[in-house]
Length: 171
Image (cartoon, rainbow, N blue to C red; front, side, top):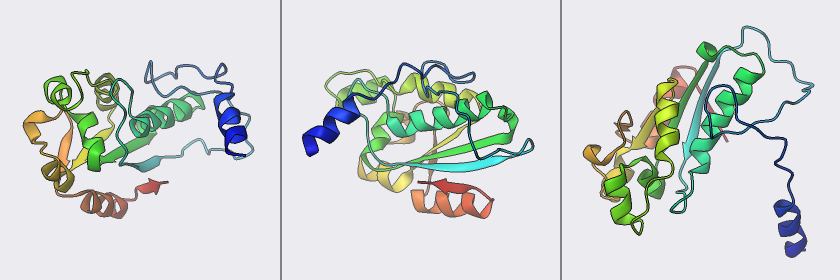
């Protein structure tokens, strides 16, 4: 049974997925004839929780989801100015928010494959926070972070603050 499921997952047809209109090279999307209409004046305020690190040489899937959320909704007609995304990174995933020097020292000399995505996300107004508690536990300082990444007291406090501002935590 497990082998059959693994084979089905490997056989997924990704040929219909393309770059979106906002973030290029990441967050690939496909058009859908949705039965759930998105009202024209919808404003999205979402938080993404990223706690799993990417393997060296790969892009962090949680951060790629932020690009996909932005791309698919803009492609579906939601104005980019109506999409507000906060990404909260904690645990070992914090490495994916570090500069190449720091990242390479901890990941067998690899460059941070997630860095170009983070740069694009930040350029499009996505707020990216690293949990300060996790950063300290994993030896990451503000100087080690990619430009524009912010450090918060904790992931928990970031979720609480943004939920009070009307943001919804996406599973």
